[in-house]
Length: 211
Image (tube, rainbow, N blue to C red; front, side, top):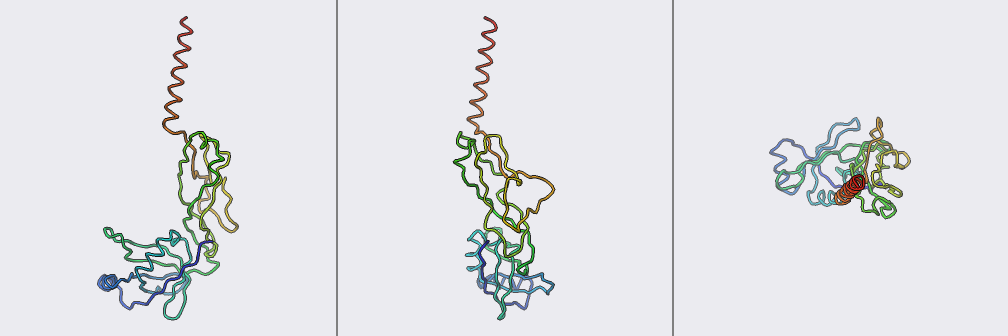
């Protein structure tokens, strides 16, 4: 399960571009907490702390406890907007969740036992189609990643969601098809070599026929 993170925040009384610009000049990022059948709560958080948590790589699929006004709110990050030039966070959205709230999140995939895949041992390449899986689970059961074992896969094989064992209580958000996660393909050099070999064999057969 992903780590639980904590952000200290302060409420903000005013919205609008002017108030938001002033907050950013002071090293703060305007944000909003919504959902949970409650009114939206306008807050602002420290930019440095938000950036530190974003750099963990697990921020968007982790429960974030927001401490504000003497209360702690359990949330899930839903969106972080960045400045188009400076690449700094300029706004964040958080969804209120309870322990048993079901959420849809993108979870990264991790491939293991590549040395046991015949296709990779013969020089094939693991072509990753989906680096993340869209999953549905309770907020407190979001996995850090999904491990996929490639043992036994050969060149030309595809790895589908049906090959993956998901943790208990976790389901794929896509249920109408057995979608592809990765394939094992032959490298260009190998394809070219195979093609040349076929051509040579064809010419040899032709020569023998003429003889």
